[in-house]
Length: 258
Image (tube, rainbow, N blue to C red; front, side, top):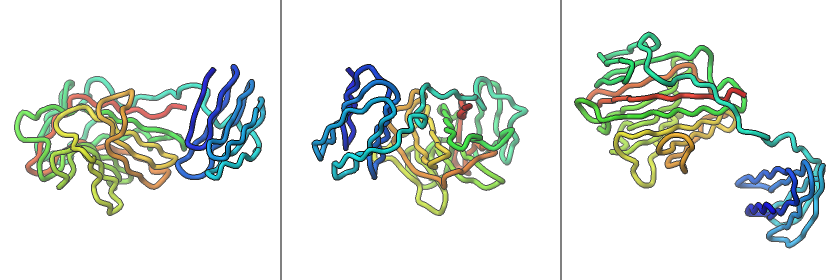
């Protein structure tokens, strides 16, 4: 039997389908789609056996409250993603903002430069869409990735920079996250340094943004921040400030397709 435990309840199924929602604050909910589930309140000690069409809410005080079931809110399969950028770099897709970077099929490299690329439409296009941006940074031919300046990737909307990740201005020798909004740069508790692959995850509905070492599947985040919910982007930028260099060996950008 499958047993699922949250901070407020434990559930044991008997060959069934059910969904659990467990927020950081508030009450846990369990909705049964098929079969039977035995639910126990961890703080109150109460126990219920729920069947298809039943649902219960369990708050911090341990009480168990019957509610209307809504099994349709839970995903029944993994979402599909559409690729915006992958494979070789296409020089015609990139507009040079300043500097003299080298754009080839294999990489984009330069010092004190910026290159921009626009999306066909604002992304993520879905109200509950997710964006994943994996960038592989290598050792520049000359100069350094980590400097007192900045070097990395930015996201824009209507010409305004809304999000940056990479080596931020004044953040020291570590990858970091800048959600703008006149907020300080977000740095990890332990520095994540040097050329490597890092993946940014952004969720449009909540505005949650996080950085993960490596590609997909995602590891635990080492930086977390937030944007105003509903934020969308129409352009990206790769670049570095004066005194800094950037070598991008690959870029994989994808968004929820459904």
